[in-house]
Picture (cartoon, rainbow over the protein chains, first blue to last red):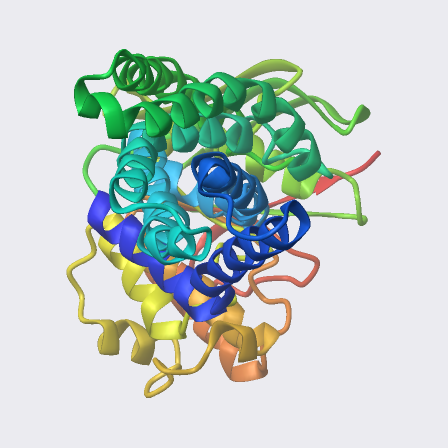
Length: 218
Length: 205
């Protein structure tokens, strides 16, 4: 069932065309503009810029996570068809990660080269994004599901999830910066992993409850 | 479907939508093999009543009970709801959308048969965005049949359909009811169901 839901989400994303291309273009442009504004190659800014770009592109995608299926009545129909809110939350999160985070991860090394980062710095940033990614997705899911039935909920959900993302952002950047010296065993990586697990533990049930509360018509 | 009779019982229902009180003190009972035709002016609460029967909104007051074979059921167990605007998403094709809902409902019929059954044969590659109102209605009917539930809640099932499409809907509903199912149909147009015991409920403010 989750497989069918994920396939549907991926199809809708690919069909729209922008879902893969837009975050990529956004991230490239963001890093390029930052590079220009901050004066050429500044490898020490790399992890921070890439984490910012990842966070912002996730916030940009919040609106299409639950809102279209809520307003079309698909969430209600899935419930009547006996599909649990947990399956819906899991499928949406997987598809969201595949369409926003994965392209960003694939592009990150290229963008990092643009900033003149070294190989280990690039590896550290990518690994920190992999470890911290579940936290970003989990908090994005909660806020998108909570506000999917509200008019103008997309802006509100950005405001709601931003404070939740701040600790992840802080430790994500710290983990990326500590990787060249300390590797994956750095305490920052362990804290980041803990933040991700905490986000999944809190965000999972909260998303499920929010879907159940919001599946009916607005 | 037949055998254990399904009953929908509304007791002293009061409904509101967006803070506007609509229906109050409504008592109705519908059983398998019967149809209930809801009619009344625009905005009187027909859709709201269907949504409440589907368990998608809670009534302000009163009880909505589904019962089959002597035990209580949840709406999701027994009811399928064909909304006025379907769940289809514009990015998909007709075939992708219908086979997704077939998969979700555990429907084993072939996609081609489902499409042919509602007069959409050979249209599986048509984008949903390019479907006419009547074709969307036919897609909704196909999803309703794929759901294989004993209770059909239908919101304006005839809107946008041509004469042949209206006959198709009426035939499908009649067959469903003859097989022991029940249907609650909100419609401005009379739904002709020959040989079926159908009751008319006029909602008024």
